[in-house]
Length: 464
Image (tube, rainbow, N blue to C red; front, side, top):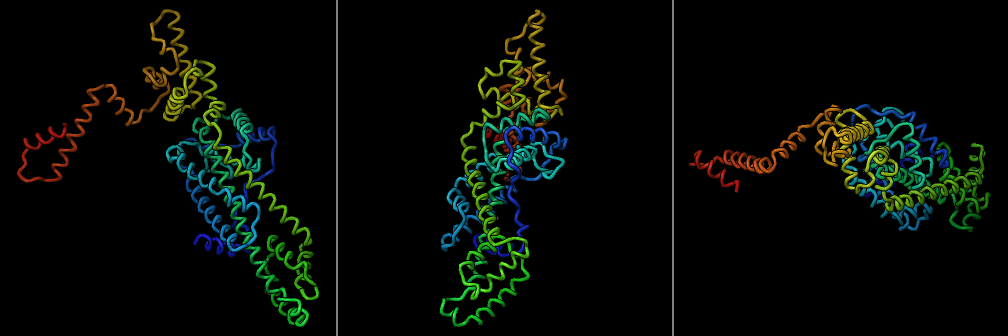
């Protein structure tokens, strides 16, 4: 069914290629020029001041996944019928399993809550999308979908020379690159199916214009000419896309113009457009080569993305990590501890209105003040109180929250109250919940003959 829907769509688009989105492509930049472009983007891009849902990347991914699945079935169906397909189509069909794996990985790694926290663009053509999506789009467009790990950090560093990226955005780089690459592949695949339908239409027209055999051609030249003229009048007012024109010319060029007047008519059409048949065919071959290279780059890039240590990449480009390493023993800690610090910085920044860099600086300042007081003999503090982690994830956090104006959410208030009560709070919370739930169920059941004492006895038994 998907294949037939795509065939129908392809034929509906024969006179309107503009309905197919163009591939994500722009001028190819060197690494140095890409760095300059990153700085220009950072100066031009603005984000909403508060969290917003923005345009859903999950919905866009779902649409692209459906399109790719339909294209895959359309192309495999054409191959099964013996239709020739382009090298790019071969690449897509042979490596579709890789694309499918990445689609499932993005769905798993992009929860709605995490996506909502990403800063969204408030201006430009990608308004409403995450800022990191605009970065990934620029990288893909100006590299012809070719991912290089040595280029990506330089691009991120250049961008952050103008404005810093958040911790969440840097973690989202890998996911967003996958989303944009899949988007580009979906656009290229739609073009493959569209041009496949054009070539099939050109073949059907050629079958009408060409005589069945040489004997019939010699005997019925006038009849063939009249039939060809009728067919050509039907096509005269239609636009002839390059893929259609190139395929039609290939089918007609080896025939005698005397018995195939459509060939002379086709040359007149080309001349009226200021071009030639050779230019049309050459341009179509060149376009196929470009699409083939882009598809190969996308498949190769998806493979490379799977092999990258993204934690190492993140810690190499994060400005918060750089600051923490410079002013504390942060680098000596294990990854889980560093990640715990980062989550605390994100949470404090999100609920206080300050930037992550400002939160990290305040935690470091607090640790340095504590160290100065301890060295002067003013206070006696345990060694861990001289580290920023004491103010991020330990007993000093309340002090840092007051400095930042942190708004404690109700669920954190409840969790902190339970922890402060210790074992009594933990056990008491479970006992209270069990008693309330059992009592409510008894009331809902409305058991006859049960009095208050019996109710209390049943509730007490439920606590066991």
